[in-house]
Length: 66
Image 1 (cartoon, rainbow, N blue to C red):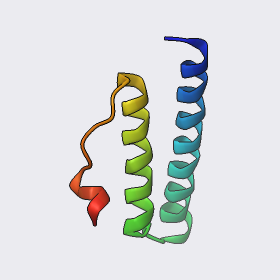
Image 2: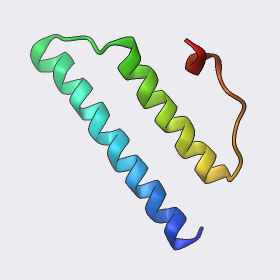
Image 3: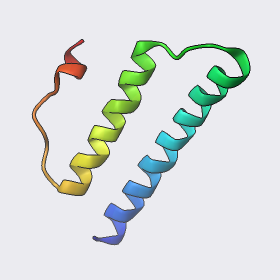
Image 4: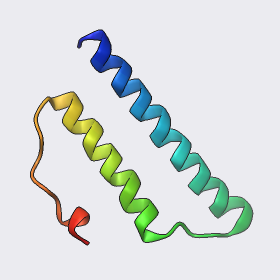
C-alpha cells in the first residue's frame, strides 16, 4: 500500500473512531440514541474507506438511498 493511501486510511479510521466515541458517549452518559442519519453517515464513511482499500468503487447501496 502506498504511503499516501496509508495516510488516507489512517485519517479515515481516526475520524470514524472519533465519531463512534461521541455516539457511544452520548448513549452511555446522556442516554441519547444516535439519529439514523448519524449512523448512516458513519456507515457511508466506512464504505468509502473500504473502497479506498479495495481500489474500486462499489455500487450505491440501499442505505445511501434512504
